[in-house]
Structure formats: structure tokens, C-alpha cells
Image (cartoon, rainbow, N blue to C red; front, side, top):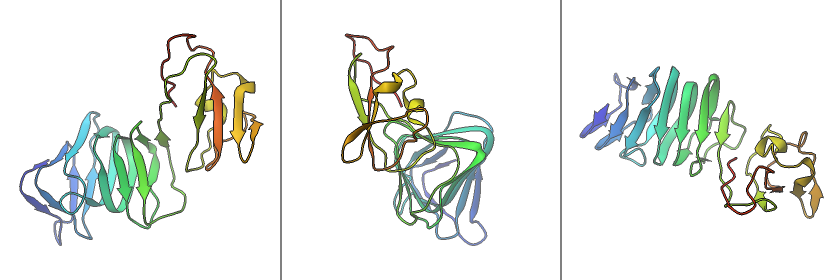
Length: 212
């Protein structure tokens, strides 16, 4: 779907099912009842153009295509609900959801926030559900360097999952003071500081990134 004019979701035309890409180069008004469902069963789909503010934000946004894959490189505004029932959504910009309900990802779906991606929820403070991945790169490090991490949310992943090639005795947690961690059993908790030494596979001279 490519919009270069005015597209309005209203009574009688409130639901849009989109199998292809979405490009909004005009004005899209979702209103308070509009729902867009992306239901492609193929990967490589994109959502581009104006997808924020009064000219481009979505009201209810759902992804539901088994085998489908969508890439969103820009910031995206959602006024009400956001869900991924099936398929993979990769977000490189800021996903801003204003609704009072959680972001939900079904067992057949994934939501991945890439290195520069983020999720902001202004109307909901509880727990989201499903497979939501956040990717971050460290500054370049070499063997013997430490890298520091923190998170605004809780997760179920253990510290060792973030750097499986780091020696188990080289994980530390900061909460008013540094302490040794048990990386195989300690989860990544919000509001704490963590320090990991570079994995043993890192070079002693060439400083590559550490991906987490």
C-alpha cells in the first residue's frame, strides 16, 4: 500500500489488512477506531514514510502472518494497541505506544529492537508479554577490557546468556557496591549495573564490538 493523498479510517472502513509494504507519503488518519493488520506470510516487508504524528500514526496495529517479516527503520507512533501475533518485527527506530494495555507478542511472533531501536509506553506501566528482544552493541573492546551494562526492564535471561564466552568469575553486579555475580543463575534485573570482562575469544589488539 502506497498512500500519496489522504487515507482515513472511519465508520465502515476502519480495518485495513495489508499483505505488502506500507508507505505513507501523504496523510493517514487512523482515528479512534482504525485498525491495521499486516498479514503477509513472506519476509522482507517494510513500513516507511510518515508513520508518526497526526499525519501517520496508527491507532491499533497488529502483525499476524506466519512466516512474515517486517522492518521498520523510522520512528513509529501507535495511539492504542500494538501486538505481534505471528511473524517477526524488527524495529530500528523508536516505537511509541500510548495505549493503556501491554505490548503483546504471541508464541508465533517476535519483536526485536535493534541497536538504535527503543520502546516507549506512555499509558502503561505493567509487564509486556512474549518474545521481545533488545540488541545492543558495546564500545569496541579487546581481551582484558570490561564493558558496562544496565537495563530499565527485568528479563528472564541469565547474565551468562549475554556473554557466554566470558569467564564465569568475571561478572560483577553493582548495587551501591560491586559484588561478584553468579552468571549462570543471576537474571538481568532493571536498575542495576553490570560489568563483564571481554569474552576469551576477543583479540588482544583489534577492538571489535560486543553484541548483546
